[in-house]
Image 1 (cartoon, rainbow, N blue to C red):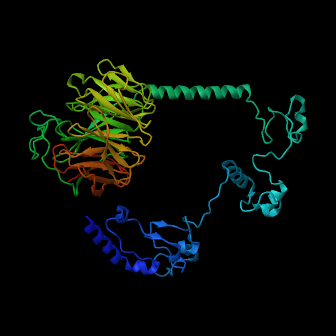
Image 2: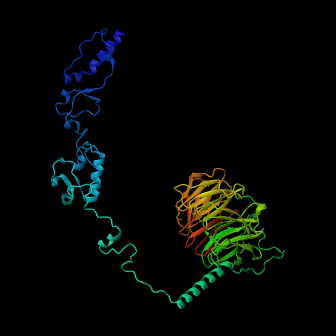
Image 3: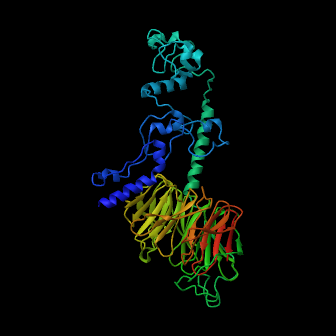
Amino acid sequence: MSAAIASLVSYGSDSDSENESESNTSVEKVNPSSMSLAVLNSAPEVAVKEAVETGIHLDPALKEVTYNPTYETMFAPEFGPMNPFKSQQMAAPRNMLSGYAEPAHVNDFMFEQQRRTFSSYGYALDPSVDTHESSSNTYIGAVEEAEKHKGLTVFESGLKKSQKRKKVKGGDAGEIDNYLGPWAKYADEKDVAKPTEDEQKELDEITAKRQKKGRNEDDAPSEEKTILHVKDMYDYQGRSYLHVPQDVGINLRSADAPDKCYLPKKQIHVWSGHTKGVSAIRLFPNSGHLLLSCSMDCKIKLWEVYGERRCLRTFIGHSKAVRDICFNNTGTQFLSAAYDRYIKLWDSETGQCISHFTNRKVPYCVKFNPDEDKQNLLVAGMSDKKIVQWDIRTGEVVQEYDRHLGAVNTITFVDENRRFVSTSDDKSLRVWEWDIPVDFKYIAEPSMHSMPAVTLSPNGKWLACQSMDNQILIFGAQNRFRLNKKKVFKGHMVAGYACQVDFSPDMSYVVSGDADGKLNIWDWKTTKLYHRIKAHDKVCISALWHPHETSKVITCGWDGQIKLWD
């Protein structure tokens, strides 16, 4: 043990020979038996006063200083020459970004008082001058104003009570110049002559006529008619155009989706016939061999998707723009909702209007209940914040869902049609049990925007919502209806337009139009914007991916055209 200590001491004395010469200290021969263990401690290097009296700055590696160093010693540059590119301000010693701030204490109240005085009157006390000396040098800013106000702050009133304006009481109003009392007329107000008795009668007659005319127009639904555009309504076997064709190269009767979908590249057809913008398009249920479109020209048209792609029939019966359409499960009937406040039920084959429904409010969206045993029930989202449920057989309202705080924009059935999701102008999403007029789920965040277009994914697990902050949000459609924060689709401009979203049948892609008339296609897994096509001259309001095709997408726009892409 003693031999080991002796070797350590000799090792230490050899390595510290340079330090001994600088500090004029030497290590004498140590008796190993009498040496304490404290010698073995690796204490930090200590700066002594004599070592830095020569003007050498402190070594940054030192951990302890046993004296008060001078300012020059503390703030000398650490290594190398001074940086020649630094400005004088940057080179000066500083302890904050803008310079060197000396520590000072100012009472919070005094600081706030002077700050407010400066912002209101333009002057404040100079903190660097002794405030007991009253002179013009005591203030900074508008010194003349300070002298005029005698240095009063915002918290000190300049006027004495006797100088303050007296309250005007009863008969003292005349003391104020140009004040004629609270019921006096304005200076430029003119008296308008009352109409004579004859003139008043004429005015009453005109008003009554206007009210009567408006009421008649509102009460009477427009006359319905239909135009068949093909020569023969039935083929040689007596089948109408509703019959699913077998000679189109794919099995339209199959319920299976394509295994792999691909990006559409080029336009292969244009359906033109509407004279104004197209507001919605719907494919025939299951097969998708027919296409129904509604337009702002008040007309609804039925088109072929395969073969010659002709316009088969036009349905005329609304006096204002048609907002939404919806097929029943079999496609034999469809509903249309328009700004003339009517919802009409049509026969797809004959073009006959079967019935119409109204509650004197504008319907924004309309849907059949998709359950086979509830095909006689329809729901419509109205402009008066309600969701109204009608029975087609009786034509009566059987239920009202009245919880939204704004016009209802969309209704989407989820969870095997036991529930439906509605979105509204109140920027919320509500989930309802069928036939129960109280929402059991209410989703509204401060960051949420209105979502005027919602689509259910083919697998029924997700809801794609077109948000008015230029992104597509994905909510779970099972149980909790939570926002999927990993799936947000951006890169398009839709603010102000209810552009319909759709999925590819294999869930590989998400498609949507935008305000610039472009068709945008995102990858579902990565949420990357894969492809963008200039589809329409005006807003591309809807995009549908054909459920049986690998790459066929149908778009419609406010330029009045419907286009097929492949």
